[in-house]
Each structure stands twice: as C-alpha cells, then as structure tokens.
Amino acid sequence: MRLREVCHLTGLSKTTIYKLGREGGFVPSISLGGSSVGWPSHLVEAWLAERLQKAMEAA
Image (cartoon, rainbow, N blue to C red):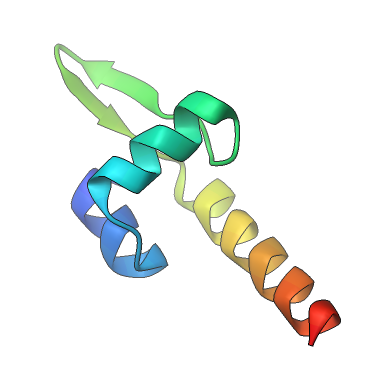
C-alpha cells in the first residue's frame, strides 16, 4: 500500500504516519526499491482494527 492509500485509509497525514513509524506507533514501511516505500495492507488494516477496538473499549 502506498503512502497516499495509507493516508486515505487511516485519515492521518503523511507527517503523522512517518512520525508514528519512527516512534514505533505505526506499521513499519518497507522498501520497494529506490526511494519508494510501501506498507503491507494487511498490517495497516490490523493496526486500524486494533485502534478501533481500543477506542470502543474506552467509550
């Protein structure tokens, strides 16, 4: 999944995604060659599901 898709799916900005990634709070990116990176879609979806579950438990 490329950055634009990750931003659209999560509602997070590029800056926030990279910041969370550096801090260990988001799915790590993987190199796609050259300067291109991506994120495994199943891991991004699992991350979203976990965040939703935590939000529902807190409510």
